[in-house]
Image 1 (cartoon, helix red, strand yellow):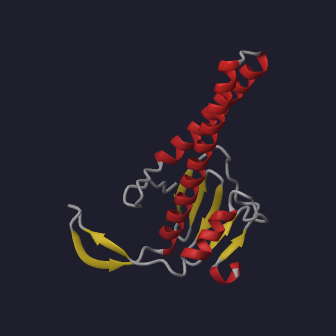
Image 2 (cartoon, helix red, strand yellow):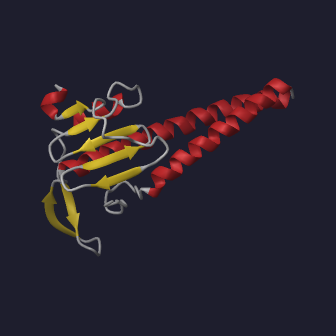
Image 3 (cartoon, helix red, strand yellow):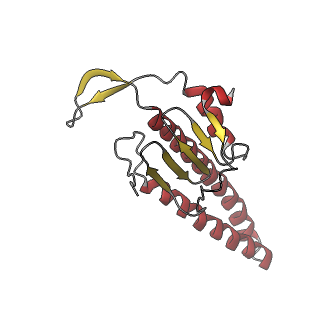
Length: 173
C-alpha cells in the first residue's frame, strides 16, 4: 500500500545526509527536504521518501499519511486581511505532507512533555519525603531530559507552526 500512496524508504540513498540536531525544510526545484525532529523525508509533488519508516516514532507519521492524504479536504482561502473569499482550494501535496509532519511531531513532543511532567511530580514527591543521593540523581536526570526536550520544542516553534502553514519559514539553499 505504501508504494501506491508514494511512501517509500530512501535509506539506501547515500547522497542524503541529515544532521540529527538540525531542523529544516529546504525547498528544491522538484523536491522538499524535511528534517523535523525524528521525521527525515524527501517530498516530491507525488511521493514521500522516508529515511526510516519503521522507526517507532515515524510509524504514526506513516499512518497519518495513509489516513489523511487520499481524503484531505480542501481548505478555505483567505485574503491578506483574513477575510474569507469563499474560495476552496486544496493544498499542494508537499504542504499536506508538511502539515501532517508538523502535527505528528507536535503531538509527540506534547506527549513527551506530559510524560516528563508526570515523572517530575513523582520524583519530586519522593524527594520531599526522602532527600537522598539516588533521588537527587533522578532530579538531575529529569532536568537534563527537560533541557533536551525544551530544545526540541523550540526548534519546532522556530518553524512558525501555528496550526496553519501560512507562516512557515523555508530555506531555498
